[in-house]
Length: 158
Image 1 (cartoon, rainbow, N blue to C red):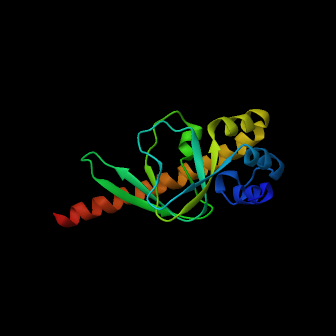
Image 2 (cartoon, helix red, strand yellow):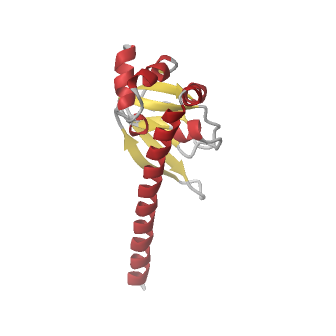
Image 3 (cartoon, helix red, strand yellow):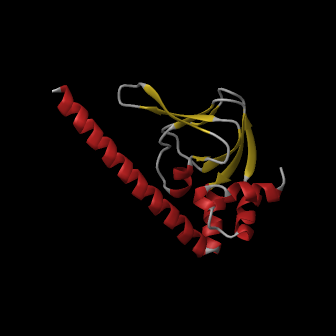
């Protein structure tokens, strides 16, 4: 895959959509292509994360283990989606396990590469902050709607 194609892929990721292509080229240059076979674990819930993965080809299942050790598949993601982005933004354990649902081609964006970009070009950080704020807003709306539905179901059940 060429550097230019990597830049185009990065531009399709909402987190990076407003970042100047020349700056994305720096991020793409420091990123690494990794391949996973169907069933391979890309990253595991609870592990310390040092990178995010952009899905270039194939699909990945997002699995979350809940309090009673039950594993729930919460999503299946495909091309041009990002997983593990919390790892490059916060020092918290991974919030989900990502497993290759099919053969999977990824672009690994390291935390160091990401922070070097933001340090050199602070406006990149501002653009990413705006995108994250938008995501948080929508997630809060979704959570509120889900709580209201749950309350309605509980009232209907008696």
